[in-house]
Each structure stands twice: as C-alpha cells, then as structure tokens.
Image (cartoon, rainbow, N blue to C red; front, side):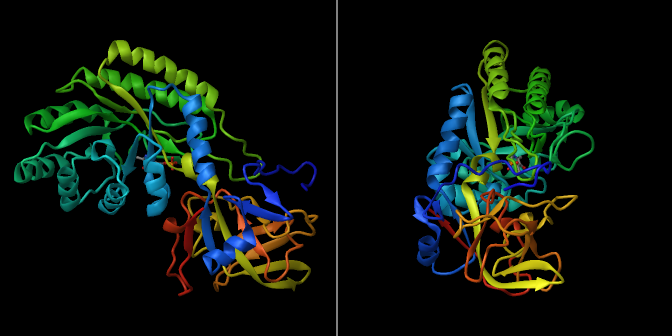
Length: 412
Ligand SMILES: *Cc1c(COP(=O)(O)O)cnc(C)c1O
C-alpha cells in the first residue's frame, strides 16, 4: 500500500468494510449515499462517537468532567447526541448557545468562551444561566448590567492567558500576547473588579492550544495550568468550584502522525485530582475537547465525476471540494499542504493502483482534496472518502464560494 521509506497515514481501522464497500454506522457506502439522496455529504458514525467517549472515560479519572467544545462540529443532531454523553458543552457564540440549549443541555453545564462577546450575547448567557468565561475587563460592566436588568446572577469564570505556551501544538491559543483571555498578571485586578461588580465567581478556564499529539506537552500544560490556578485562587473572591484545564488533544491527520497516548494524561490528571482535593477542595476539574471527541468519527464523501489524465498525471474530478472541506484542501491553518487519509470507499478491496490527485469542481488550483495518492483505481461514479473529517469540516468551510450546492450532513 505504502511506498517503502515514505511515512504512512495512521491506520483508519475504526472503520470497517464489507464486500469492498466502506461501512458507516453499519451501512454500505452506496446505500448510504442513496439514502442521503445526493453527494457530497458528511457522515458521522454514532457508534464511533460513543466509543471515543468510552475510551476517554476509561483513561481519565472519574472525577474529571468531560466537556464537548461544539465549535468542532455544531451539527444540531450531533450536539444532541453528545449532550447526552458528556458532562457539559462549551459554546463560543450566541448561536452555538442556542444549539446547545435546544439539544437539552442543562444550562448549569454550559460554558461560554470567546473574545469579543457582544452585549446581547452576554445578556443571553445570563438569561440562560450559563457560565461565562470572561476574557476582558470590558465584559464585567455588561454582565453586571444584564444581571441587574434580569434579576439573575451572572456566573463567571476567568479565562486566563497563561504565562507559558503549549509546546508542539498545531495551534497556540495561550501564552505570550494573545487576544484570548486575560493575561495572568492582570487577573488579580480583574478578580477585584468581579468582586466589586457583584458577579458570581466560580473559577478559572485555561486553554493553551489545539491539535497536540504529544502527551508530555499536554501533561506539562495541565500541570502548569493547575499551578497557575492555585496561585490565582488565593486572590479570588470566592472558592474555585470550576477549574477548566483546557484540552488540545490531537488526532492523526497526516503521514507519520500517530494517535495520542492517553495513559500519561490520565495518570497526571489523577495526581491533579488528588492535589485539588487538598488544595482546592470545592473545585471540579474539567477538560474540554472538540476535535478529539468527534474528528475521527466523521467522513466526507464525494462522487467521482471525471477521470482525466494530464501529461501523465491522473486527476479524479469530484463533486466535492474546498467549499465543503477547507481543512482537507490544506487551507485551514496548514503551513505546508499535506494529504488527509483518503480511500475509494466503493473499492476497498481493490489494489491501490497508480497515484491520482483528487480535485473539486471549483475554478481554483487550491481546490485539491488529495495530491498524488494511490487512488488511481477509482472510476467515474465511485465514491471517494476523506477520513478524519468529523471536526472543522462543513462549518469551517466557505460553502458559498463559487455557488455550488450546499453539503448535507448525516448522523448514522
Ligand atoms: C477551539 C476550542 C476548543 C476545542 O479545540 P479542539 O482542538 O477542537 O479540541 C476548546 N476550547 C476552546 C476555548 C476553544 O477555543
């Protein structure tokens, strides 16, 4: 399958096939495509979502609360599915807050983070009774005014921009100068203003970064986050009840990447749970994960419309593209474009054949879903599958670019 010496994609063994067809939620791909009624589509496998939650729960101490950061995949049916399986939902806008509430999430278990929350969004949050992760001094008078108008408490935690970085992270979101959170050194002043404004302080939120595959780096960040929260807690107006240590757990996308080892993270969190029992006795530890919970459970499926050969290179032209799956095209935060794992989902037993590039219908060379991968056995009408597509897919893509039809999403 793989060229010797060239790094390979991590195996996609969580999906099975039968009679040469990929199965999603137990359904053969062509039948699923017929059921959906059109291509392209995203399909998310309920069984795989459940497996992932079970695996995490088994690896982490039972006291650690597991939140789903729904920006990774805000499909309402999926959020509803996850809401029944995790301990809380993290939202990042008033729009996401609505989806989380519609999904039946207990407002007490929703937290709301993000820079630049509008006054109306803060009022929505207070009215709903969710926890607001404060990211700026500016939010305090707005929250106090909303609480006053509504006659309700404004529940707040402080999102801290830590004085360290999450090493080897795909995307750093803390440490150094950042638009996220309040710099650790300004937090004592913020805590004083929270007390003066009469807001209901509940704890701290630290989120250092995203897409990390190195357990040691995550352990180090969680350790340092705990220490920092402990120091800041000494100046808090009320006991810390919520300590959100972030997440950042990555999944393997590109050749050479391997799955994250949860064991050291679980062991470290066990130590932190024990320390918290002594040093922050009212605090519940939370981790918030998006991609790790849902990314591996989803595929993007598109149909081969044409098979062209240009000067010796094979191109599979499909009905899918960057307008639905910006991340697979390499234009969502990648520095050097690399291929997502992909397969011809209607010929899973066929020998790979020659290399081919998978492109979309858009008139731009950026519309590339796979470059020179061993998929050349695909023919017109075959279904091409991009794995690791359950997170940052449809909602993170410029769907209106070039006016093609919208993508369908199904939970199977
Ligand atoms: C984006 C984000 C997450 C989710 O990140 P993943 O890499 O998808 O796990 C969690 N928390 C905050 C504050 C975020 O901004």
